[in-house]
Structure formats: C-alpha cells, structure tokens
Length: 287
Image (cartoon, rainbow, N blue to C red; front, side, top):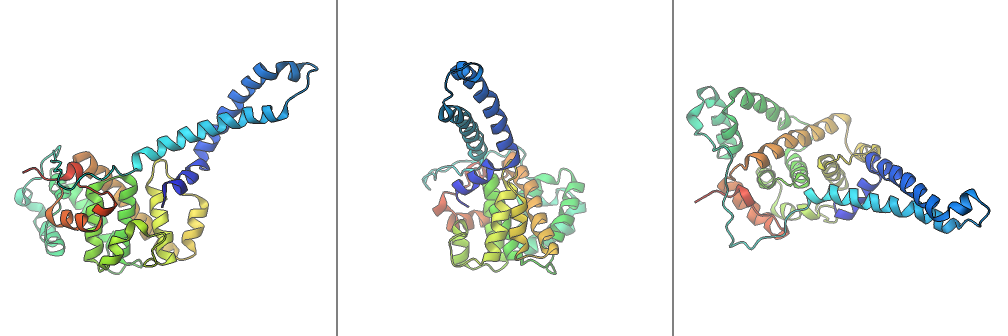
C-alpha cells in the first residue's frame, strides 16, 4: 500500500480527525474573534470566506502533522549500498541449542522443518515456558489443516512486519513464504502486490488488511472488515488476524532484541527484498 493511501486512512481515522476538529474549533474561533471581532459582535460586514478558511487551515495543519508523525516510523530506510556491512549488536546473545533440555524436542522439530533454529527462540529460551507457549501459538497459526494457505499467511506476516519496520521478520517471512510454496516471481513482487497481476483480489484484501492492522495507530476500519468479508469467511478472518497479531509480538521482540539474522533468511532477503530497499541493518551477524 502506498504512503498516500495509508495517509488518507490515518486522516479519517477516529483519533486524528477528532483531535484536528477540536484544534480547528478552538484556534479558528480565537483567530476569528481577534480578526473579525467587530463583525461578530458589532455591525461591520462579516467576511465569510475568511471565517471558513480560519477554521480550515488549523484543521489541515493539525491533520498533516499527526499523519506525518504516524507515518514516519513505518517508512523503510533508504537502501544502503550492499557492500556496506552494518554489524549486529544483539542485546542478548542467542544461547546454544542444548542450553534448555526441556526444549530439545521442540528445537529438533523446528530444525527439521526450517533447517535451523531461529535466534529469536534461542534468545527466548532463557524463559523456557515462554518458548513452549509461543510454540503452541505458532503451531495453531501454521496448522496445515487451516483454512488459509500457509504461504499466503507468510506473506500476510511479511506485510505486517514491513508496516512495523522489523527487518528480521521481513526476511524470515519471505523465507517462510518460499518454504510454503510461493514462487519466486511472486516473492519478488510482494511490495507491489496492489498492482501486480500475480496477486488475486482476495490476496490484496488480506494484505491491505495486514498493513492497516500493523501500523500505529491501528488503521483498520469497519470498511476494512467489509472488504475482507467479500473474500474470506469469519473462520479465515480469525486465522488472518491471528497471524498478524503473532507477528505483532515477533516484530517487537526481534526489533528490540536486535536478533542476529540467520544465514538462510539473510540470503532470501537479499535475493527478493534488497531491490526495494531492505537491508538486514542491526540484524547482520558480527564477524
């Protein structure tokens, strides 16, 4: 979704337009009293155009400022030259796979599925119960008997992660989409999903929804749900929102921890995302 469309959604979201209206009514009234007090309280002729503009200008300025502030955290940084190696500095180092014996079976299953154990859970294993709880949620989200294709769920998670600005999760989700059968041309076109013929209207609706649900403040509206219901059942919507919500946790976890990005998703990210400005940034391994 392009910035201007997101900006329009913000501009009409409940919080922003109400605050802008309050500012406009207060500032506009004060300025009109100052500038046209003799007309309002006396017999002079009232300039209606000036009166209206005196309300419209502070409304526009307040809205512009609020929308600009809201959009700023979600824009990707400009692409860095690929030869510039930004070294990672994880706030907590990933612990060895064998550190928590009670997680052995879980880590073996993850390694068999992905080919590696993500550093996110190797950091998290300092609290094994958190890993176990997360594993239960992940198993439900990626249930092979789910009603939403797992490859599409990874793309939904990717768009959510892009909205949140988590470079680690962007790489992981594009790698996961490939793992679940999304073909290379579609992976490469993920950031142009709105215009690419490789995406169906149902997929676009789900990806638009993922972006709106992942920006701060949340930009989902009643119309967003109506658009989603055109293509997806209530059970499928629960799966879609569940995927977005789980990555809300993962985006904050990995961005905060500065989780080092593993070799496999690093390579996939550079192959399919670098052309759009993605870099591993702080998630690049040292050494």
